[in-house]
Amino acid sequence: MAVSRRRLVRRNDLAELSRLSGWLETAARELHLPRDTAFAAELCLAEAVTNVISYGYPDGGTHEVVLSLTREPDRLVLAVEDDGIAFNPLGVAAPVPVSRIEEVAIGGLGIHLIRRFMDDVRYEREDNRNRLAMAVWLPATEPAP
Amino acid sequence: MQLDTITLDGGITRVNLTGRMDIPGTAAIEIKFSALASGPQPRLLVDLSQVSFLASIGLRALFANARTIKQRGRRMALVNPEPMVAKVLETSAVETLIPVFQDLDAACEALRHS
Image (tube, rainbow over all chains, first blue to last red; front, side, top):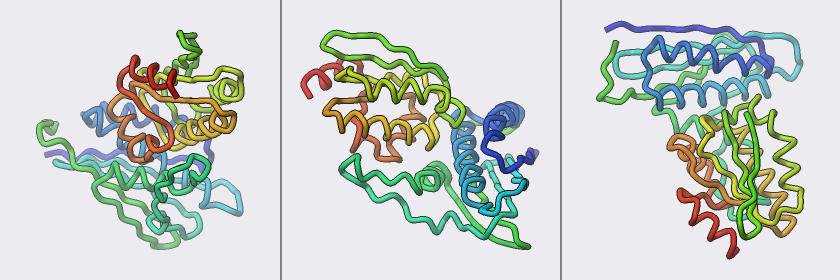
């Protein structure tokens, strides 16, 4: 079975995120991704990239964030790689359930969503680069291309 | 993203959101949405049936507006999210803070009596 891969390089600029959806829509179609899988992929990539752009470069400057999407026979693998400061998003605590809206803590929502929508999430740092790899099982009834 | 409103019986303003609640989409409706949250309408019913995508930036806007509304002694509810959008809401435990309904009549009833 074929493994399809897409790779996208984006500058660390939140405005670039608006182009992410166009790229992902095309990739999802070409990789024959089920609709819900495409939703989960876009959500998790957007949350991961937002975190990198928001927190990874306190010194500013222009950097590149490399995204990849790989369809394996039974799962979709997403990866976000950057050269920002060392940051393990998995070290962020899950939001504590709160009973009053005044106490809602916004931080940690992105990672919490990634953990929920993906089946496997791993972080590693190598050669001064952060790499967040996420994988989700494809529905069993969907035929592979 | 687009936002328009319809006035329903019982002092309810139905807020119809259409499109994607990602960063650009949320930014496109932010001013209008917070103006509604700060305005005089006592009950806001946010219809999510035409929202095809919801990320944490959209959740933050919902929380922020719900907070504003509550501080002014008013009420807000969400209605008819699509399944994947509902999963985002559920993961974020929105329901413990902003009621979510799958039925328009039930949502209106709850808002009128809250």
